[in-house]
Image 1: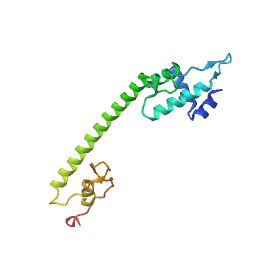
Image 2: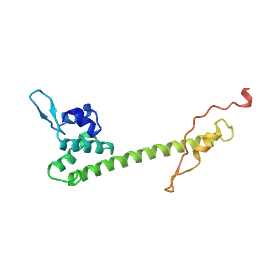
Image 3: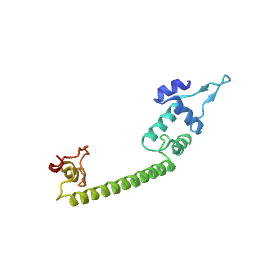
Image 4: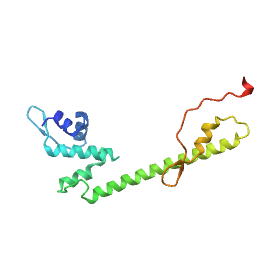
Length: 160
């Protein structure tokens, strides 16, 4: 099959398939006229690459999974190297989540401090500031700031 049909079957762009080829992840046969010819196995490979990429595994890091199929694995994650790549990706996600949690907590602390400093002057848009300090239901017992809503500065009586 040609690249257009492969792209349609795998729900990818021809450009993505050419990238996979440039990275050495797929290797089509070349005809004398220069056209690439792909087989059913390549359909599976590009679908697996796409699926792994959607899970957060960079295309360049999918080789252990494809090698697993090439060495006779029925599934891309039947090999120890594939499992190690899953773990590496999970560890990276955990680090990102930890960093985001720390940023959220720091912002919440600063909001609380600002709300406390301004509690007597009422210079903040209080419904928005106070609602951000209320816990929202996370289902896991943690408290989180509620959804953000844009606010308009309130006009004080003195400025009228």
